[in-house]
Image 1 (cartoon, one colour):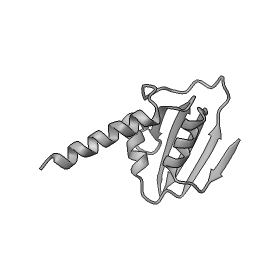
Image 2 (cartoon, rainbow, N blue to C red):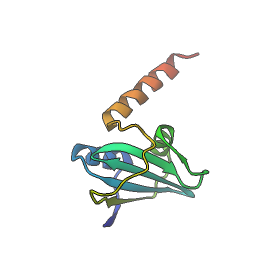
Image 3 (cartoon, helix red, strand yellow):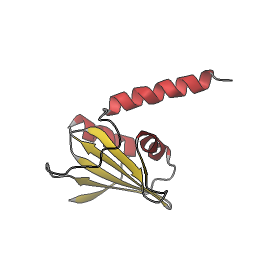
Length: 110
């Protein structure tokens, strides 16, 4: 069942991670549309549907930076759903740590 949310995207992903849910997040920000898929709480797929169907870890990071996210629709998946895996099954914590390292390195560069 799809559900509209008024929460921050990263908060929703974090909640799905905490309870190890199988979820799809449909994210809309202006003309941009993206999808984030979690399997047992791990992020396994992210794609931007209006940009040549790009997918993967960098796309996940890009979606998180979108300004003006207007609508996030969540759908809980059935156990037999087989997502297209474009991100090695990393937890949200692993992805956040990688992003923190990248940000720290970019601050050190002149």
